[in-house]
Length: 250
Ligand SMILES: [Zn+2]
Image 1 (cartoon, rainbow, N blue to C red):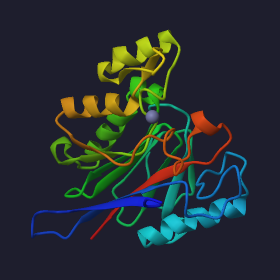
Image 2: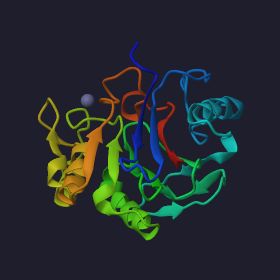
Image 3: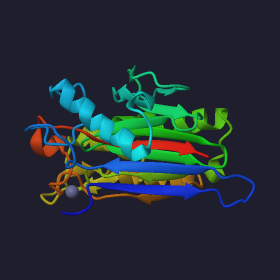
Image 4: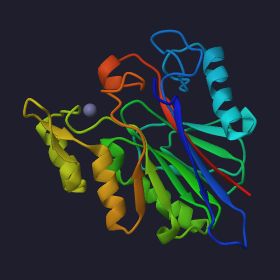
C-alpha cells in the first residue's frame, strides 16, 4: 500500500510573514464507505450513505486541522465557472472551482479520472481548488480560477499549481471529434490508446497551458484507471470520488 493521501505545504520564503499554503490529495482508502464507494468517498451525489460521506469528509477536516463546517465542497458540472467563498457554506452548486482568501477555510474539488487542481499564492494568501476534465480544459476553468485569484490579490508568477491523480492519455480513448476539440484547445493533450484510438491526456494539456503562462506546475499521484488505490469512473462506473483540499494559514 502506498500513501492513503499526499500532502504538501508551501511556506513563504520571506521572513516578514508566516503564511503557509497547504494541499491534500486523498486516495481511495482511509474512510468508512461500503462497496462500491469503498472506502474514502467524499462525494454526496453518487449514491453513497450520507453518514459515511460525512465521516469521510470529517477526516479531511481533521487532516487540515479545521472543523468540517470550514470545509467547502461543490456540486461540479464540467463548467468554467468558479465561486469565491469567504466562509463555510457547505456545498456550492454548479461550479467547478472554489477560490478563497480566508485563512483556514478549506476548499475541495472532487474527481475520479478528471484532474483535481490545487492553486496556491502563499504570499497573497489566496488559494483555489478546481475540477477539470476535458470539457473544463476546453472551457478554461483553470484560467477562470487564475483570474478570480488575481482579483483577490494573487499574482500569476507566484501561483503554484499541483495537478493531482487523473486518468492518463493511453487509458482515456475518446471519439475522434472529442479528441480533435480537446487538441484544438490544448495540443499537448493529444494522446493515443494502446490500440491506436485517439485519446486525451487532460493533465498534460492543463500543464502545458499553465506552463505557457509562466506558472510553476507539478504532478501529484499517478493514473486513476491504473492505480487500484484511486477511484476511477472509467474503470469502475459506479464508484466514489477522491479529492483535493486546499487552504492557507498564518
Ligand atoms: Zn493510465
